[in-house]
Length: 381
Image 1 (cartoon, rainbow, N blue to C red):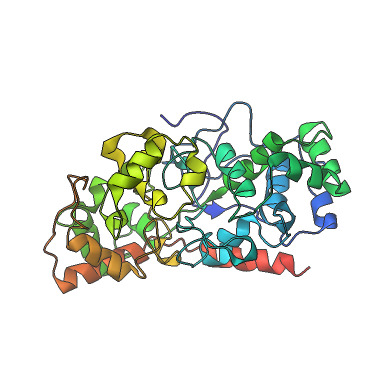
Image 2 (cartoon, rainbow, N blue to C red):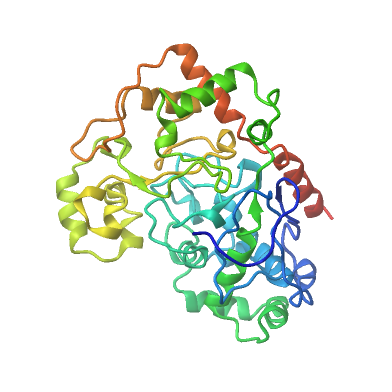
């Protein structure tokens, strides 16, 4: 179910060719002239390619333009927030904060997920309200507590005043008529290149039995067995992202929340993006999208690659460490009428909890730190 496209395969892993950071007009202009060449994702042979929309093929020029936009704070109302503010390479493409912080230090209500490997997900945002990266990219731009632009039209008008962007969009899309859809396509294209593998776990799965410590190896056995993690954090070599792309109520959202009243309000309100940022209503999770009672308090299963870099955890950032996450699951989540049927007390020993944490640490790509340094080095030029 993950078809198509552009040919693939090479070595292990990677974050591909990120440059143009931070942004200036000279760097932006350097994106021009690259639109002619298709861009080939570099994935391990065993991994299926992600779906790439037919109307947004990967090209070198579009990747470069999207990379520039991703790091450009001028996309926000007061020029203080870019995509990278909440999805920062230095924090595993998350932000290290409990919840996202936008313009004027306004706080959201959900934790910033990583943008690594998002090309492989079936839906975006914790509640899955965006079916594609293109749709996801448009949301934060006009959210009042994120980038705060009054409208997409206002952002387009702002960017059209920047000569380098007019040239860049002309080169990539063949027209100076910069549109919000083009902008979203460029950012989504860049994000599709943010793929990482090459972790100790990958080498272990490939046959190097010394790649994991004995504790992490025990953790892998627990992950597949007693701890039941693999039920939702699915893993197989063609799709090695540790997620089932489904939504589950594990009880996190049930803390201090009157769901009955919130669900009645949300049932007649169709503005999912606004509700997703309202304290209380945001805890309804997938229900905001489907209006199905079974989805109350359910959130998307996040992937686990590089998870050690993206604390704190859960959709609300309520768990500070991997250790506390394991303890949460070991207790069986938080009981509630919509608790997922797979969530139950696990009866793990202290050693078993430590083994699971060691496994999760082994999912960190070895390439990532050096690539982040390379980003910083290029930014100093």
